[in-house]
Length: 356
Image (cartoon, rainbow, N blue to C red; front, side):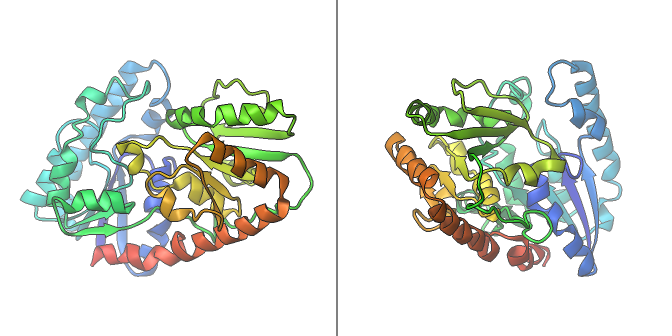
């Protein structure tokens, strides 16, 4: 089969693309399929997209993306499937999806891993929020041949408009990427860690008082944050590492414990527990809020801890900081959970079945 991927960003840059479908491209080739990746944003535009300023270059980059999409329509009839990740264009109504599905009659696989029908505005995207056209998700779900959804909450939403909704979780490549396991018994200063983009740094606010209390008691640990921007937090244990793809796994392996706090709102319900999946794949116990898919991935006391209150965050952190054997036990169970349920190897048949 010939498969066209309409994606927002250049290959190898955005986590949603890397862990939703790029990991399966070799499997498509191995099964005799041909694919083409067609990003909307160029590499040059991506490099400045989340930087302040550059307004003219950003607008020019968006306009150039629309021009590429228009020319691409001439080749769409040569493909059997069109895989749309999140949206064919980042602003405006779903004109391209409508033309591909309703005029050209092509089978669209519509893939999303967030509650993208909701407006989740941050400082970085507030300028574009008014033209995002979030409600287009409903129409694309209707037109799709299949909807590929990152968790049950997203699949339930899609089924309101189209019964062909497939649960296709975000997965971890445990063979080629997350292929090491943290030795929890090795000597060294204990590290509590968190990784994510600047837009999700706000979720750390609920655990900062707990970390500050542990600091005040004299417990020796480092709170390591890996992100694209440094956080401003009143913690003397704070160490910031700028995220780099080349050191991604090595930096994560420095954690003894990984945190994933969330606010319980509709947007967070659509989250696919990605931070927890990364920690757990490396044998790092995850402490998570009981929101959305977190409750499915982390089984309390078996492969991590689910923490709903400050007292529960504190108790769980104390246990893990003081007990290396507990960290090791939970880490082994966490790795097994990923291998069995959320790995590329386990999910490859499910992904390939989208194109049938």
